[in-house]
Length: 162
Ligand code: ADP
Image (cartoon, rainbow, N blue to C red; front, side, top):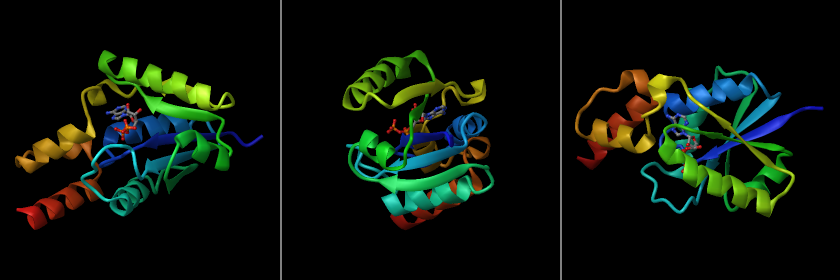
């Protein structure tokens, strides 16, 4: 049977930490759907179209990965794409409590979908989309942590907003 996993998130913007998790997931599943959440309760810096496009460009060379955007509950979207596993990344201990709560709540909402946690390479352990936005706004260079398309998008956004 074709195994499908969903990797949901805000991806505002996608970083090399997210890509590291995707690469690991793509070695285990036949298909991994990177699912960009439209309304995650966060005010996003990039629009849903921009976030989805950046994810598509950044992952175009990873086999078995597709990018889609969704609205509403992630478990509902997971059912529509026949995903049986939800991938989440675990960085420092600080992620754990929130991620555990989310995993248990999602299990309650849909008993057929299990959460699988993957740990990134240690160089991405302290990397987050928020940190990337803050540092690039202050003029910092973070080439080793973000795809080139994200670097360009951040620079363009700053130019427009400055
Ligand atoms: P969300 O708003 O759902 O937390 P994010 O885009 O921030 O969405 O993250 C999506 C998933 O990727 C989460 O499970 C998060 O813990 C994980 N993640 C984010 N950054 C990294 C990273 N540097 N290394 C590994 N996992 C990460």
